[in-house]
Length: 212
Length: 181
Length: 185
Image 1: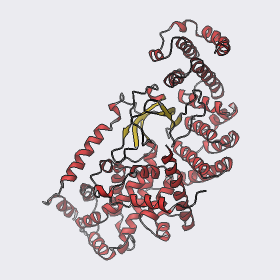
Image 2 (image 1 turned 90 degrees about the horizontal axis):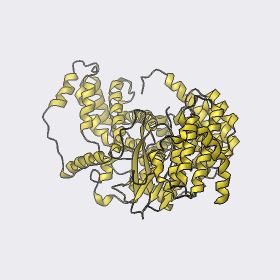
Image 3 (image 1 turned 120 degrees about the vertical axis):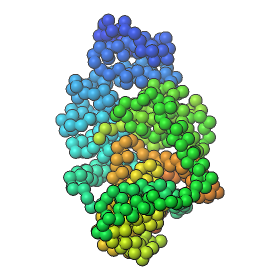
Image 4 (image 1 turned 180 degrees about the vertical axis):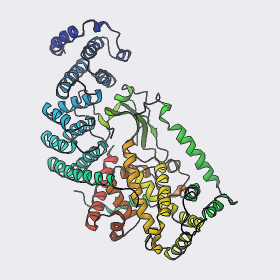
């Protein structure tokens, strides 16, 4: 425990300084559920995030998850701090106008091992929200798909697929893995099928409605 | 790969082949709708559809049927998510969560969407099958971590959803992603 | 069991409707309502969407009745319209959120069959079915629940026979995986 606190010390100094007067702001009442040791540290991390215009809700939720699961104080603080850093890296990769849900999804993708350049490339390719493509990327890695295979598949689908297509794609991969397919080849095969289906659907959407 | 399991598939098929009945009100809705459409070449026969709609008829409603209708209203009323939640933003969509937990006395849905508050979203037993627990909540686009809390002590991930890989607290969580397109 | 087993009288009713007797169409609606409802409820996972798809299919069929080439096979033709309609409704429902079965009437257990015929696990089966992709669910239902021949399925869905056989096979495998997974919890 002592080691953990010491490790957290330098980060705390930074966040406290960065927070400045924000540190004195009223603590989110939901954080009352944290113990008296954890609460001020998490509150400082939240204030610091707010001061740098990062979304604070993911940090609060992560702390509350830890509290509800009765995690030790040092684990809660470490988790919140790590998430704050991931959110910052996500914004560096995606740009300052990124929405909070996109940043939260991007933080999870970075944590899963996606290189920041993949996030930047996704932003370039896709005009719509990146929340679902990033979440699909993260979930595929969690299912055992190598991160480069998952990233290549998501990038190949990002430009033209709707969110629902991407979610279906992820489900197809997970089912094939459950049925015994190697994760990387299951991903490539499902991506090819999804890309073909997206083209067909796009064509169908342009057709004149009429004949049932 | 699994060997074909005829018995399991047979059981599924037997369930699914049971008759499904639809209220005859559907017939009336269809006939009312087509009454407003041009008749086929006989002409002037939209009146026939109206006659069909407006003629006197006996509606048979068994006691069981009446019970079904009453009970359906109760279920709809009880399953309204705003029983537990504030009004959802316009972009929210309803999501259903299902877990099979035959030996549980209580199950809660707990996650980023309810401040990880175990008291906020108690799951309901399905009326037809006590081992199935369900909850329906509105979610706005985003990625949410969640888990099921069984009997107030056991954390269970959703077997139907991706796992949260970044799990720092030693108990499993799942992820649900809500898209916008 | 085919889907055109009452062909002759269907042809007669279709002829009357085409001759201008719109009211006669009610006979076709009543005849096919429940049969098609079963497919729609299982395919879409809830009664509300199923009834909407069903109603729409009947109305579309009426509007394009002149294009029903073989009136004796009105049932099969109508079925094709419903299969298509379920595809679009299902895609729209998927956009609303994760689909799962909430057949309120079935949950209350008083609308269908007798209580003795209902067995435990019905919701688990529907839950498992809802987890198949729409393509697999469609193929499984048409083959095993509606008891269609592959050639008929190919006409309804526009997919090839070998693709449909593969979908049915995969659907069976996946249902086993999903149901065994459910039993472990």
